[in-house]
Length: 309
Image 1 (cartoon, rainbow, N blue to C red):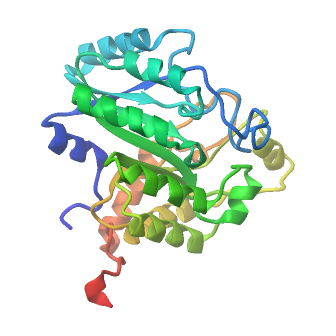
Image 2: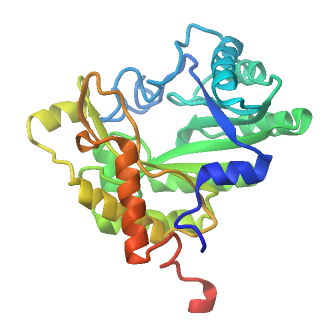
């Protein structure tokens, strides 16, 4: 391929004809591995605020959050098109009518897509049918972001995800019936995972024909189970160079038409015990791309097609 990897920003420009910005939306919800439904405490790496540290407070209604963020980005970047991104916790882990009301609030001018972050074990037909009606009635695209993190079920158990790979596969097959785009979230440096897990995760996403992937680098927060393990030296984090190698290897085994939203995560430094080896996320991204160029490595280069077999 001409590019080193299939970058999300380029994909959005091609799809919508111009640069599109995501607007994070924070609604009051939780996760089934937090509230006792299937477990307590949530994922071992997840703090009380979840992952929505860049979001506005969920006491603001959806329309107000959209307006504040949209006005700011329009003024700063002259943007015209936006994605309403329900980001934090498990957004389909709500009563259906409550979920519907939040989604309906997000249907405003200049929103071209609604993106919903959730867990693979919280995908049910009623919610998908409703989202399909929204797509058809309002001519707005729908995408679902599923937290997988890894295909290694031992690691999934150790981080208290409360689901394994089978639920992820089931969710993907359910969603694909409605032609919604699917983005899988993965963390490539979870304690317990190795390069074999990295490769297998990419292979599974390729076989499932996932539309997009978002690669995270693990960050460790105070007041989390993983934070306690880290401070007690019961877990370690791989080096930055090892992470860079895992990302490149992951991309090599990932089909080249899968869009990559992110190569490395960001996190607040406040209350953090470990974030990106103390290096700016963009420097790590540059390092990944520089090494790919130097070594002639690119997305999809190790994917075996039917013709290769």
